[in-house]
Structure formats: structure tokens, C-alpha cells
Image (tube, rainbow, N blue to C red; front, side, top):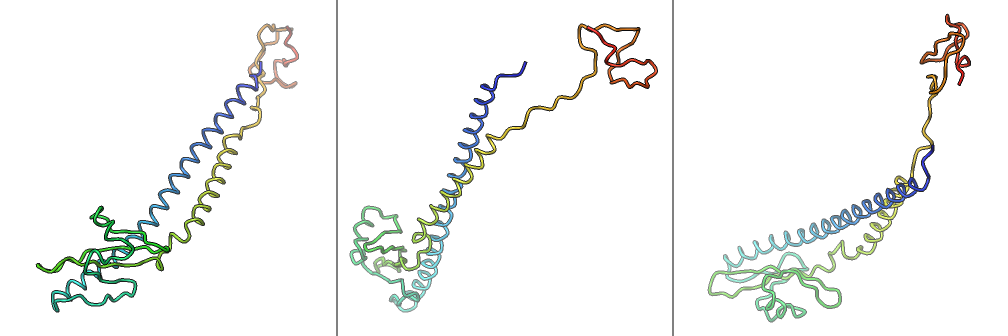
Length: 208
């Protein structure tokens, strides 16, 4: 008796759904990790530039008692919080630990505090990095690439989940079927008999 094709079809559909769901989950996770990685690398680069400039500014202030013009043209030293551009001072009053700000007209800022010896007030090293951003301008292209890659991966997973082997190969069984009896004194064997066998027996000698 052959198994009904309906349970097989249901099992295949479930396998396809499992493969597709698992692949989609992995694609989303790896896409999220990729975006976080590139954003982290970019922000870390700006923080390193600010850190080096801040060290140079602190050394210059300790030697001359004033701040020097930054070596990078996209940086500036602001000596008062209320003089920070694009209302950053107001946001900084509500979130003192914040160091990254989005300005108007696409501008983007990174900040670092400059703390001179007392009683001099704190100053701010401001970097306007909108012209240096590499990830944000190509964010839509990256998302499209991740979406297409995820779609292809899910399609391949569906093909793997829907793939199945052909009907199983059945080897010949020469053992005597149940309900047979020997004829002419022949003794059935577990392997096919040839006309040249000593016993002269063959499957044709079996009768039901």
C-alpha cells in the first residue's frame, strides 16, 4: 500500500515555511548587524578625530591660555553653550550626556567638551560632519541591496524546502513469498537461481 500524497504535500509545505521563515529571520538579523556595524565605524572615526583635536586644544590652552583654531576646517571651538549652532545648546541642557546632534538643512554635528583649568569655563569642540558622511547618503541603496539579498535567500530556501527525491528504489527480493510451497523437491534460496545451479531450482519452481 502506498502512502497518500496528501500528508507528504502537507509535510513539504511545512518544510518550505520553516526554511523560508528561518532564512528571513537570519537575513534580517545579519542586515541589522551590517547597518549597526557601518554606523558604528563611521561614528567611531569622527570621535577619534575629535579626541585628537581636543588633546591638541588642551595642550595649546595649557601653554598659551587660549584656544587655537582647529586644524580641521569642519571643526570649531565654541566657548559658550548658548552659542552652539542650530539650537544644540537647548538640547544639551535637557540631555547633558548627548554628543551627536542633527541640525537643520541636513547638517550633522558631533561634540566634545573642552575643560580648561579652573576657573575658566567649559568650551565645546564642534564638528559639522554632514559633508563627510558616507553611510547616510547611501542608506537607501544599502537597504535595497539587503532586501534583494533577503528575497533571493528566501527563494532559495523555498526551493530547498520544496525539493524532494523521486520514488524510492525497490530492490528485487527473491525470497520466497509467504504462502508459497516447494515443487519437485526444489528448495527456494535467498538469491536468484540460474539454470546452471546444482539444484536446478528457480523462482519458477515456486507455486502458490
